[in-house]
Length: 310
Image 1 (cartoon, rainbow, N blue to C red):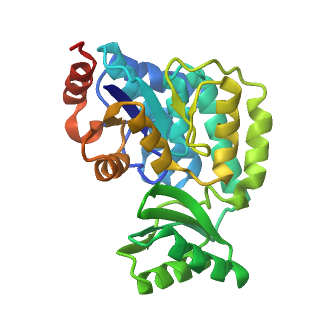
Image 2 (cartoon, helix red, strand yellow):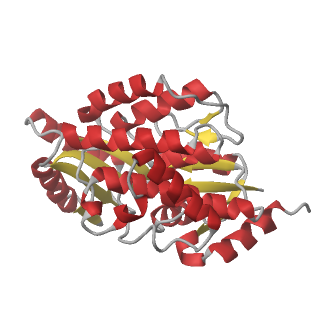
């Protein structure tokens, strides 16, 4: 049996998410490293005001995920597989040994800035639960034909799909989805149209910026967002990190692959439990835990238990 670490993406952020991390030297070290890379105090980024910024949100998610994984690893609780949802993929890459943390901080900061600059207002994301992909696709095609920019974004589970585009267009699609039988259809707390063609220019900028950053082969398999494959080649990971921002995140396929590879414990790093709920629903025979909910000690015990030889 294997342990998969899951790093959440934008939408999971919480006020004071950094200040709520454990009092641990590795947490302090991670925040200090981030502050040095940013040339400002990273611990101040998790205020309610600062988290209105996509840049601050993405940096905080990176810091929270990496510092938490480092604390677990210091107690022998290491992953066999890693995956990150959207910006969470950068934290997964750090923990897999692919990317230096300070390089990740710098590129995530640029990523957030480019995303904000591309669409400063009037755009975002929504989520639809309980509607088949084919039926939602027809609704999206109808609105695209009418000039409304709304696209598939994340395929999170068999019945949870997020969409990206103009707020006006998203609201229309959500209303249509409700009328078509969706259990839930609502806007997400995301201010940019992630994971759709609207961010092609951001992908191009990321690809160019990543050329100058050293990537190494992963120490454990890394699941790509765009490909839903276990990537082991550093150039393939670099390409996935660059282009996933403008392509759908195939989260359900990626975690299903991990299940096929033997993952029976899915551990979601802070903050939140969004990915835990998805794993619980998708893999009832496996165990899925949120570190935020279970606490670090319980997560550590569960991970080490899985790793004990029979």
